[in-house]
Image (cartoon, rainbow, N blue to C red; front, top):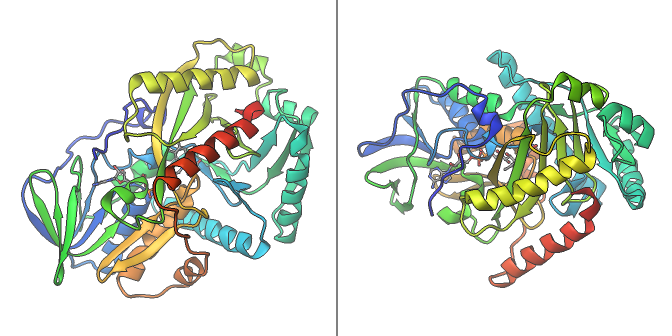
Amino acid sequence: MNVVNDNSCSWINDLDKRSSIKTLDKDKSCDWLIVGAGYTGLSAARKLSELHPGQKIIIVDAQLAGEGASGRNSGYLVDTTLNDGFTSNKELTNYKKKTDIYRLGIDAIKKFIKEHQVDCEWNESGKYFASSNQKDRKKLENFSKTLLKLNFEHDILEKNDLGKRLGTNFYNLALYTKGGVLLHPGKLVRSMVDMLPDNVELLENSQLNEWSKNNKTILCKFNNHKITTKKVIFCTNGFLKSLGIKNNYNFPLTLTASMTRSLTDTEFKSIGEPKEWGVLPIRPMGATIRMTKNKRILIRNTAEVHNSFKMSKLDLSKRSLNQILGIKKRFPALPDDIIESSWSGIVSRTRNSSQIFDKIDDNIFAAGCYNGSGIGVGTLFGEQIAIKASNKKSNEINIIEGRNKPTRLPPQPFLDIGIKARLIFERFRSQSDI
Ligand SMILES: Cc1cc2nc3c(=O)[nH]c(=O)nc-3n(C[C@H](O)[C@H](O)[C@H](O)COP(=O)(O)OP(=O)(O)OC[C@H]3O[C@@H](n4cnc5c(N)ncnc54)[C@H](O)[C@@H]3O)c2cc1C
């Protein structure tokens, strides 16, 4: 395994380059080791520092902190989801549990940005679950009934209204929820890196290759050095499986996205100067598409099993072509060469779309697997797994632990065959909205 990402993500390229990056350059020991510095790991580190000001806390990442999925996602902080992966939300009690967790996730981020005065282009704009296909009306109406029962404010909108709000006549119907925030994911995670407390040591470009438990300590081996720790928290999300964590419960998927340059004033006027908006698809493999604050269009319309973690330039450019087609379908008047950057990122899935929040063994903990909704939930799970690992209790932990637990995956080769077949089937069903 080698964890590297492309360096072509607009969100990350918007940020200032960081200096004084520290790597693991000698053997070390600590009280706490956190592996993975995305929203989950950084939030766990922040919380541990508060709970144990006198203890030695190290957080490591294989690449630069925050530059995995946390810095390269689509920036929807959700209060509700229609398709969580491929799982529809049919059962009210479970759906409520899921949205209770989303709500706590939003609260956790709100608290963080308020406390640290973070500018992450926060916009409580709500979101649209939209489709070009009238056949999706029934699904939307059923979703509306679920939301009504749980008191989520929403409206069903038709083509004309959508055209005015989104600047495209592509969509025929949508359910708009008032809840849900759009933000700049790179700015959010960078602020978590910048705000790491002084008693947390951050070591980057330092990949954990192997770990083992010996009596009361855990030995973690990196390329040239090792860290011996009393407790470890794994926060590597799409890479949990490659470290042998909950192997039979999670698997990685690779997503790709593209972002256009900012539209010119003339281009923006030609589509009616819409306010910032975010559309999620009604079918799982349809496109997620967003108009950002500075008039860029983001599109994400792939999810696949990809053999290596790093996508080659050629593979990425094939997906980027697909994304320009997705943009042209919706905005035919925009030029073909408008994409500024394309990138890939790894998410983690479980069979029933439930998250991992677990004690793996004495002194060994893991949190992750949020599918496409890890901004809030990752932040929440990071803070709460730190509390759990410190043998403390919280109301949030009770709510998290009341969720459905991830179910066991089928063995190989059935797992790979099953995932690939499902992705092809769902892609076919979503064809019109890719
Ligand atoms: C294209 C895309 C769009 C998405 N859109 C959304 C969205 O709109 N809304 C939303 O809520 N979520 C979205 N997500 C999902 C969201 O980004 C993730 O759920 C979230 O970032 C998970 O955070 P994390 O900290 O658990 O994991 P990550 O951010 O993946 O961090 C894990 C870290 O672990 C490090 N690591 C891995 N292996 C090792 C190792 N062996 N040693 C050391 N370090 C290691 C990695 O380098 C990485 O930095 C999207 C994801 C992608 C890829």
